[in-house]
Image (cartoon, rainbow, N blue to C red; front, side, top):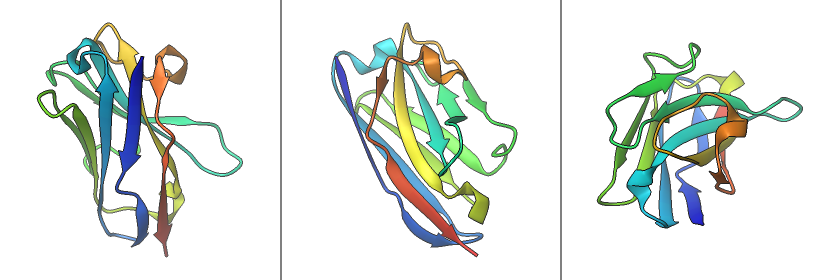
Length: 124
């Protein structure tokens, strides 16, 4: 079992920045690829970013490339999502997820563990 706890969400104006954190506990963190997903009201959960077990490869949704950065520190059992130039349409609950095997996926169904989510609200 892996427990994931997100933090760092909040209210920000359009164009602003937020840094989300996801702290993991339980099994060996570097056995897992980590992903960030988001879900807006009335919409399906969508992929945002992912990072392989050693940080060697990262993946982003086209909509966030160049504005969001995913990173991890295996010594701290933590993954971050730095979000810049935020847009109102990016208002959503942001979820952290862990995938066994260490290699990323953009599919939410391929992740094994999920956090409870953190709300990000971007005002116009």
